[in-house]
Image (tube, rainbow, N blue to C red):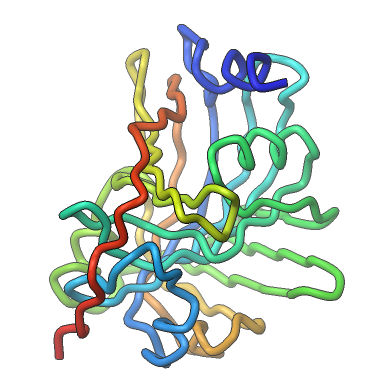
Length: 244
């Protein structure tokens, strides 16, 4: 199974991910205590805590048995090995193969039947339901968002949904080993980004500001990229207090 997953994840010369549409937002946590509680011991507090939420429709992925699937995730900015990245607190997906491939890299994925992203003339609407676990709605409207702090502004203005490393734990969600995973383009690729505002409603343990309009972006990608694991370590960096 591991050799099959290695081939599915790493050996695609034209890129495993060919076309996607996704919605993302970044914001300061409404509850820093909850933020600390969800950050595992293997990772440290970042210089500035930031929550990232995304919903992605992977419209073209290869090879079979990978097929089109959807994914929702809530991630926390975290420190590891002298640099920062994103720790996924939860990451439901809509296919078993996507779940298995994600576990191979340490992502806390589980299968749920309902994740959708529908584009409209003036924005998009995302909806994710995991029975017994969560239900989240994201209403996005095109427009010019208000100014954001430095870190959030850089993230919001990035073309890619995930320009930075993802931080995963093995065993999944527990550690002690922590890995870095990133998207790498392997053929010429193009991102298109449309700015706007999103309102999120749903339960996420105090990490979602209910009903608040947040700066957000709708992204579209065409090209070819792979997920690449860049190494792992058992070192646990010291926690740092967040910047005021």
